[in-house]
Structure formats: structure tokens, C-alpha cells
Length: 289
Image (cartoon, rainbow, N blue to C red; front, side, top):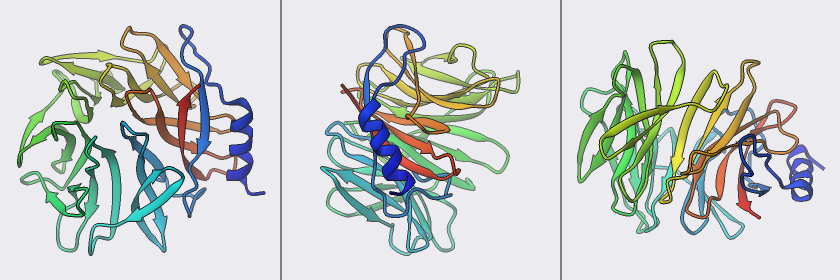
């Protein structure tokens, strides 16, 4: 029995994420059977989960980092044609997938992969690379770009991107957007630490997981619940869910040494990455019990 199967069996038996603040949610964890996982590629993860429970992410296949979708126990890999790598970050209700990709001769670019199988590629003007990280039902996309010196958040719609920088911060990323246009992400504060934020009706508000030294919001659903990750003073990494009422819950994949939450849907199903005791990574999905 390999470590992925072993850990999955443990999780099927335990299946509960402890709530550090408030009663929280009870989760059943399942490892996603990615062909190459567990492996040492740090972006091997479930990066987003759609309204119907479809997980998208990234996993190395035949030496190439490829995007994947996972639904109804079927794992499907895909790669933007001619690209050296593809990472799928989010999936819209209509099945469109967004992410990042590296094409020959081009900067790293954001992509939209339609349900019909067509690709749209976008690079922010002058950017070293561009990521698309979230998409809502109106096909409005969140993301970020790097200008060679600093990260900037972007909101993209109908071929045009608007830049967003957290007030007073640097290295801003917009990581997810819900149907109401509410955005979450992270930024570097003047204290040198990264903080999570939410952008609602043009008002940006910073928040941190209580007691953390690093907080990063990665997903937001239409209820306003947020998924992300945080680091403790001892350097441990855990996922979190922040309910719309402000209640925080720590997320730890049973038996793993590291857990992140990268995506959350309207059922509060979450996906992300876990690390084995041998320092290899695998994607997971967790369902509310």
C-alpha cells in the first residue's frame, strides 16, 4: 500500500477537520488519484472546485506539468497546445476553466479553456507573467501579474483587465471572485508579512487567521465563505475556512504534515494540497459531512 492510499484510508476513517474558533464544519477528506501523486512538485494540488463538485488543478504527466479536471471519480489531464506547462486554477459554472500556461516565445500567460475545447490566451501588457485564478458565473476573472518588480492584482472581463493594489500594500494578488463580484486575495503589508483581504463593493478589508504569521485567502463562494491557508509562528502550514459570519476554522488533512485550501464552492466543499511525511504532495477534495 503506497502512502497516498494509506493516508486516504486514514481520512476515510477520521474525516473531521477541527474547528479552532467556533463549532465549524465537519469534513470527509478524499485524496484525488492523480497519476503522478504523491510527488515532489509543489504545485501538484487541487486549485479550484466548481459548483457541481468538479475539481481542477495541476499534476505532472509524462514529464510535463498539466492541468486536470476530476469529476465523478474520473481524472482527465489537459495541456494548452504547445505549452511547456499548464496549471488549472478555477472552473466556472458553465464549465470554463482558467489558469496559467507557458507558450514558446511568450511570457507566461493566463488562459480560458471553454467547455467547447477552445483556448483564449491573455498576457497583461508589459507583464513578465500573468495568472488567471478565479472565474464567476458572469465570466469575470480574477488574477494577477508580475511586472518584473512587484505583483499586482487584476480583474479581467471581455478582453480588458483592471489593476488592483491593496491600499498601502505591495505584491497584491486577486485569487478568487464570486458571482456578486466579491474578490479575495493576499498582499504584503508594511510589516513584511502577507495578509488576506476581501474586496466588497470597492471596499478592501484586511484580515488574518488568528495568531498567524502569514494569511492567504484563495477562494470565495457565493455565500461569502472564504478558503485559504495560514502559517503558525512555528512555521507549520494549515488551511482555513472563514465563514461569512467571521468564524474561522483550521483545516488539517489527517496524517499530513502540510495542508492548504485553494478552492471552495457553494456547498463549502474544499480542495487543495496535502504533504506526506516523506515530503511529497497530492491533491485532495473534502466534502461537508
